[in-house]
Image 1 (cartoon, rainbow, N blue to C red):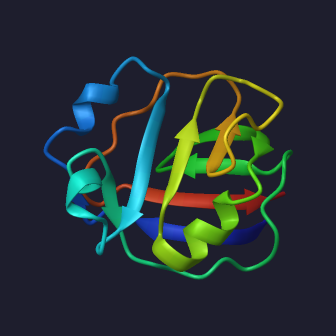
Image 2 (tube, rainbow, N blue to C red; image 1 turned 45 degrees about the horizontal axis):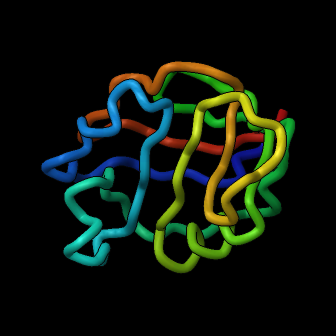
Length: 121
């Protein structure tokens, strides 16, 4: 298994639950703009080791989801700002450039200390 990206949730925005049931969530580095911070899971800005691609897996703690599409800007904003939207709708075409898409699933319970990884098997 090759770890492409790895991070840990450091804090929760006050309004992250507003996306509950929407099959999506947002991560952002600690320097998230004030107008977005309340809607994000805050993480460190960590490097990406390789290329993020469909067919890899998003791991959230012990759960694993196959990546189905990745927007062109998602790796850029993830590496530079720690920012990426994760959409768990199962879509196979990236409709938004800053979004990573996974197989259809409900967003798992994310809390301080949750580990987020992108891996290639």
